[in-house]
Length: 82
Length: 236
Image (cartoon, rainbow over all chains, first blue to last red):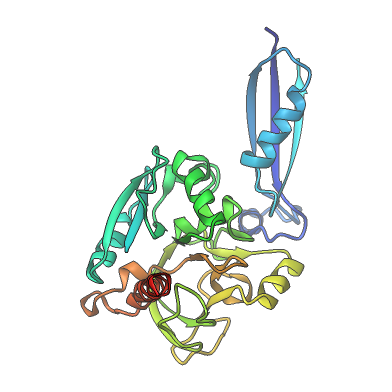
C-alpha cells in the first residue's frame, strides 16, 4: 500500500465577491500597513491517501469537484506528493 | 396529506416546521437524516439550522446524507420539496436549485423581520397568494447572499424561477431592503419545473400573530391547497 498525500487549495473564482478578503484587507490598512492592496480568502485541505491503483488523481479531483469545492463559486487546485 | 420534516444533526427549526403543519391541521412526521424513508410524505421540508455544524460550507455535508438521496429522487419525479434557510443551502449544494448562497455581504449574522414580495403564484408554495403580495417574515442567517453567474441569473429570471424578493414595507425593491447582498434581491427561487422551492426567510416562524406575523402561514396553506386540489383531480 503506497501512502500519498494530496493538498487541495480552494479559492473563489475571479469576479466572485469575497467580502471576507475585503474586510481583512481593510483591517490590514487599519493596522497601518498600506502596501497590501488586495486579499483573497480560501481554504486548504490535506488528504492522506491509501491506494495503489493509477486513477487516484482522477478520483481525488472528483472528490474536490463534488464536495471540497462548490463549482458554482469556487476553483480548486490539487498538489500530490509521494 | 402528509408533511415530512427532515432532521439533520444541527437542524433547529424542524419542530417549528412540524408545528406549522399541525397548525393547518395536517399530518406530519420527522424524517431522520440517516434513513432513506420519506414515509409517504406529500411534501418534504428541509428545515433551518446548522446541519453538520455548517462545516465546509453551509449545506455541503447534509447533501450527502442518506435521506437526501431519497429527497433528490422524490424531486426528480415531481415531488414537492421546500428548503428553508439551511434547507435552501442544502438544495443549492445538492444541485436541485441553481446558484449558491454566500456569506452575507456585511459578514454579520442577521436575525430580523423583513418584507418579501411574492413574484409568482403558479406554484404549489405560493398559490394562495397573489403576485405582488407583501409578506412579513423573519430571516436568521449568515450565509444568505444569493449568487449566480450573470447569464444563469438572467435565465432563472426569464424562466420565472424567482419566487420571492426582498422589498420595503410597500413592496418596492430597494437596496436598503436587501438584508444580505443577494443578487436581484432574491429571497427565494424555484427549480424550472416549480416543484422545488428554496427560501432564506422562515415562514414557519411567522404562523401566529403572537409571533409578530402570521404571513408565513400562506406558504403552508398554499401547499395544502395545491395537494388537496391535486387529490381532487386524481379522484375525479
